[in-house]
Length: 352
Image (cartoon, rainbow, N blue to C red):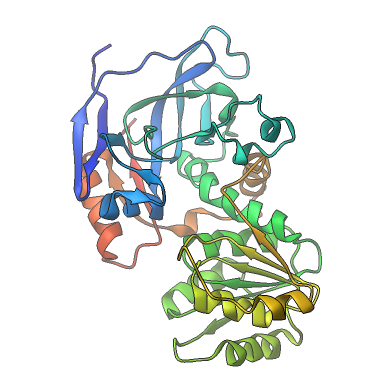
C-alpha cells in the first residue's frame, strides 16, 4: 500500500535520511498506528554518531525511533483490546511470550526480544507503523500523545525505583540529572520517597531536577573526591541515602554512589555508560550494599501511565524542543550538538 509514509532511516554513521515508504499492513495480532509523537533518545543519537551500541550494530538501513505514541488506524483480525481511533502509548519491546523469562514475568530479559530501533529491528519514526496490540496501552482522553510517548523513558525510572525498592519514606540519591535521572526523580517522589537528592555537574539540569521534585540538588565538580561528595550528600539529608540510582554509567559517579549509600542499602545501575569501571567492591560487600542492574523495564507501563494520568507526574516539563517529522534531520542535529540545551526533543509525525 503506497501512500505518504515519510520515514526516518539511518543508513550508516551520520547518514540519516527521510524517505517515503509503503504503509505496512498489520499482522493478525497487530495494529496499524498513525503515529503521533516520537521522542529522541540518547541511544538514537548514539547509533547516529557511532553506528552501534555494544553488540548491536547498524549493518543495514534502520528506521529510527522507539519513544512513541499514536492512534489506531487499523486492527488485525485477532485484536480484541483495541479499536480504530484509540490513542495508545507504544511499549517498544515485544517479547516472545513463551520463554522462561517471559513466563516468570521478566520479559525484558527475553533473548528473543524485538525492540524498536535496535539493530536489526526497525523503529517507529514514521507516519505509519505496525505494532503488537498487547504492547500498546490505551491512553485516557486527558493524556496527550506527547505524554504517551514519554511513558517510555518514564518506565525506565519506574523500573529503576522498583529494582531499588523505593517506597514510602525512602531516602534516595539520584546521580545525574539527564533525562533518565529526571524521570527517576519523578518516579521516586511519586512512589513515596521522603527525600530525593540529585547531583550533577550542570546547574541548568539541577534546576530541572528541582522542578521534578528533588528536595535537594548539589552541583559537583570533576575534581571532588567521592568521599567529599558523599559527605555533602549526607549533610544535606541528615543521614546516608538508603537507595541510590546511578543514571550516568560512569566510574566516578558509581564510586560516589557506593561511597554515599547507607550500609545495608541498595545501589542500582541505571545509566549505560562505560563498559568497564573500577569500583570499591570489597568496601561495598562488607557494608552489605546490594548492587543491582537495570535493563529497560518490565510490566512498568501501567504504573507509569497511572502516574501521568493521575497528575502525580508531569512529564511534559521535560520537553524542551519540538519539531515536525519533515524537520527530523534538524531535530537530530540539535540532539547531537546540544544546541539550546535540549533535554527531551519531540517530533510530531502527523499534523492532524
